[in-house]
Length: 194
Ligand SMILES: [Zn+2]
Ligand SMILES: [Zn+2]
Image 1: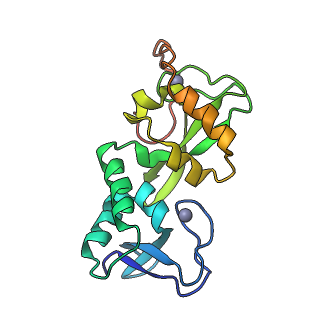
Image 2: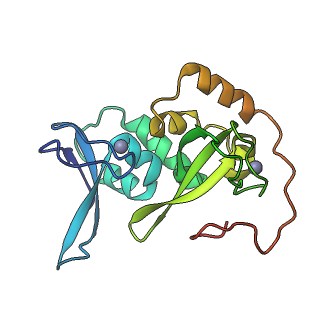
């Protein structure tokens, strides 16, 4: 069973990328995976936008296999290709103000200052997304190898205002904080070590 792009038959499925429901009739991406509970395969459903951002390789496969025209396919393909090229981009899960001052940046290993913007990350492992910590906004360039992250932040944190995004854009232009000394207790998060 291949990956599919098809209209949602109902509004029951939730998008694996953002957690929101996919509207009935809206085109959705189904990633084909082995069914863990039975023989055969199952689909994990995504909004097209979320699939392009978080599951770029299988999404591009489905786009390439599609014969009918698809609105926005060039833009979606471009977004997905950026995620293949910059392999950490699909980890972006939104932006928020640090509530505690205790979270450690995955790039520089310094604590994120309370109230400062941080970018939240997820790792995709064993067919699911798991929380994988944060990076400072000024560490985005070093970590993601690009500062072109605004569309992803907005997609996965729909509540971000234009003023929030302007603040974040200004932070993106700042130099990365100096890296703390690596220590064995440097707060590694489960999953990939980098
Ligand atoms: Zn979604
Ligand atoms: Zn940092």
